[in-house]
Length: 365
Ligand SMILES: Nc1nc2c(ncn2[C@@H]2O[C@H](COP(=O)(O)OP(=O)(O)OP(=O)(O)O)[C@@H](O)[C@H]2O)c(=O)[nH]1
Ligand SMILES: [Mg+2]
Image (cartoon, rainbow, N blue to C red; front, side, top):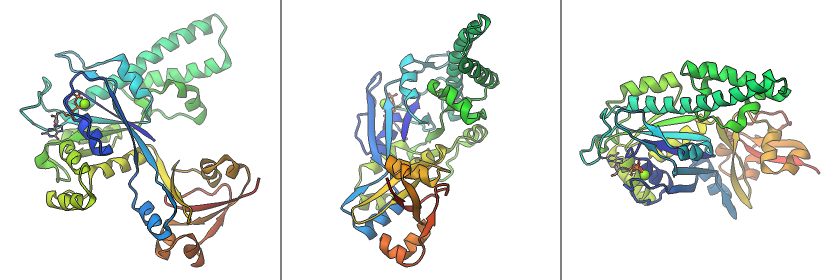
């Protein structure tokens, strides 16, 4: 899974990147076009439990790729905030966008001309994303229509034109591609565009350090309403504090979180939100050789999960041996111990995998 951090200059993008990835990229490098990429293990207590009870030779957690930088949104006086072409190149390659908006006051960090207005900031950027898609669609439609009039349009292009017309209509009403219901075929016909307003999005409101431990920090009411309207999860955090937390040893981190009144590091909250926004979940394979977490889409069936492990497992699929997470946990042991409690089920190809299922695929090729 790939997430990309975007936002106006000086909103805390690099701080958040450091918090998520435990990196130490230098802050305040105005005008830097360097791209930061890191692959991080996804924290999951279930995975940790499986490792503890199986003591495997090898452990393979799920991973998340985080990028930041590479494309900038410039702040321009009185004009709409300007997105460079490089911005869209950077953004088209990620699956989920994390938008940082400034909600912290700090006299040392210059403010945009509208001051601190996280709702307005989010609104402007989301609107720009949407308009960028509209521009792409309009120019493509122009060409498709020419082909249609000259009667040299293929059936594929005719179908594509229909979908694009549909998207155009909703974008003109300021409804992002995300909002448009499309069939699987329709989705396929426009996949290559990687529309930016069609990507799942999470908004991060970067609040002042004094509010780091608050569950509902003041000043975000308007943004909250907007995020709800947009169907977008909103996470409040203090990127500066989270970055410090990310540099701590686990023991120190626990004590610090407690002292600050922070229930859970924002890193973990954000990663969970990214999974949910993308409709992803995990299943596990466990044993003495390896404990591994696999990321699949919610609703994936057993044969799809098998495919994820290896194409041979899908091709020669016989049955999936399944132990539900709760049963596995209750057994307090690895696969054999859990199986001995009689909780293992045999499921067919069409079984819809549940979050946390432990799978063992029987196959023959
Ligand atoms: N007080 C306060 N300062 C913060 C917070 N988050 C970031 N900053 C400061 O704001 C400045 C910019 O933070 P960065 O993380 O570099 O922001 P950025 O969005 O990457 O900035 P550019 O790359 O220049 O666009 C730094 O001096 C940070 O220390 C915060 O939550 N509170
Ligand atoms: Mg930066």
